[in-house]
Length: 352
Image (cartoon, rainbow, N blue to C red):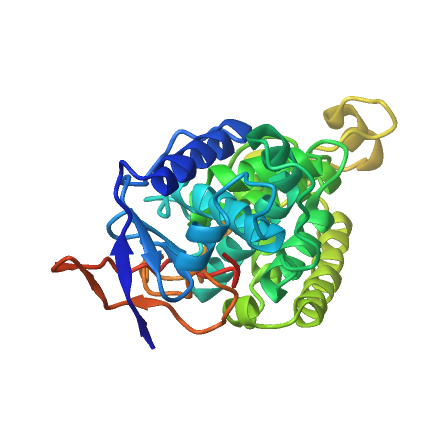
């Protein structure tokens, strides 16, 4: 159902408070991009961030009753208003596309993960923003726990570790681009759990990440914004099992075929503190014959990733954020004779 939207005057207290909170949210996690066009709309529905125009919409009740530090204000709406600001700042702070990137995911799964990452960022930084902004004593409670949040949170937990911890990973995901978030998660898995297999940047590392990304592309990603935390947790657990199995498979297999081809057929791993070449000579008394040129071409072909999702337009329609309902947001109203923007984005957290 279309929602109406009325533009908030830039000289109003509501607009000034939103801008103040938006700037504070960006200070917590600065990004290069800032795609908000400085238009703010009070919406009858959930609102969202318009990926096409750069306008932001927030439900009118949250703008009216939530963006105030008045002690008598409704604390639940205050919390949801701050959550909405954090989510919009996350969405506006990253680009969607990454031209030329082989591991970009331009599908509905990418939109679902984008939504989940925004929800995780909002939950992670909520208390810091509330304290910084002077909204003391607020708590989100369980309102941020949508299916998208639960799935993204579980996957972030799976990928985090000693080399790339949870906070650093959330920060990287918030930088975008949105179509590269699965690849960013895969890179964290490589650094934390497969550093000995793909220790350097290159075609082989990209191919290993591609294998890991494929285990994360669960078909339910897009629908999780409107589903329960239990549904999201189930998806996270299924992905986790597949991811663990793939990590073990890669470990057993050793270096990726692209790396073996680059080193003349000898896996370049450290063995017992010896140089890789010395260890290989001790373990293999007879040198193996050189690869036939045709074999080299076959192995080299593995460097070019197949099955990459087509560029279907990550900025296409998707659910938007707003007042907690789960319907798809489409702006159709007008304000003062001016058509309202389409407040839609790749996925929606179902909050704000």
